[in-house]
Length: 159
Ligand SMILES: *[C@@H]1O[C@H](CO)[C@@H](O)[C@H](O)[C@H]1NC(C)=O
Ligand SMILES: *[C@@H]1O[C@H](CO)[C@@H](O)[C@H](O)[C@H]1NC(C)=O
Ligand SMILES: *[C@@H]1O[C@H](CO)[C@@H](O)[C@H](O)[C@H]1NC(C)=O
Ligand SMILES: *[C@@H]1O[C@H](CO)[C@@H](O)[C@H](O)[C@H]1NC(C)=O
Ligand SMILES: *[C@@H]1O[C@H](CO)[C@@H](O)[C@H](O)[C@H]1NC(C)=O
Image (tube, rainbow, N blue to C red; front, side):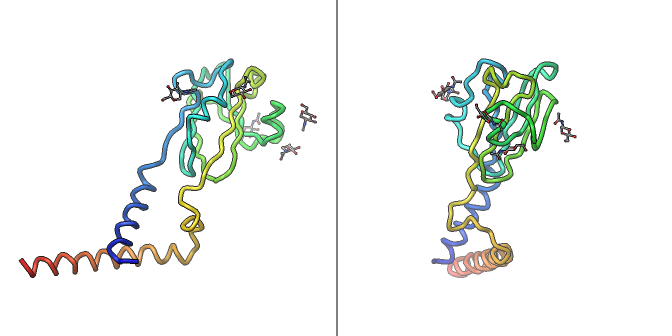
């Protein structure tokens, strides 16, 4: 691949990584409350690794539990891997997998359950960031810097 194009692509992807992290507010302005179909809400969102999901609710009434599929299907918090109670909880979606959240006080049966599928950040050919590519990126960036300086000098010398 052309080196300038590679440099541009690298710049694009490193910038994209920084700017695309999104906070998905569950239920938007309706928040985390009974009687809302959160399946409809999720259909409007695409979740990527590094995004946040946030729950906003009356902390005296509701809460959030992270459960597995059984817990989601059956509204049980047994074996929950996380719980939040602040009323304004930000949860990092760190892995590319399906997450399940429910309300733990019985309101799960009134619809307070949401399941989101988190997609990997990069397209498949770039996705598995091996230790060797972690080494390559900084040195390649350095190379881009040096070659763009050389590139600028090349033109300046010709004006
Ligand atoms: C929520 O909406 C989806 C899509 O229309 C539907 O399949 C599902 O049955 C609804 N869930 C409830 C609890 O009404
Ligand atoms: C989905 O997004 C559209 C456009 O932003 C909005 O009008 C609609 O209310 C949203 N639906 C849900 C269920 O959030
Ligand atoms: C979940 O509920 C289903 C019926 O809705 C039941 O067959 C199943 O045994 C339950 N699973 C657990 C782990 O409680
Ligand atoms: C979910 O966790 C419960 C409790 O630890 C366990 O019994 C169940 O098999 C798990 N279900 C799945 C789908 O992993
Ligand atoms: C909530 O999570 C904490 C650890 O963060 C744990 O000690 C506690 O038992 C959990 N509560 C419930 C009700 O699962």
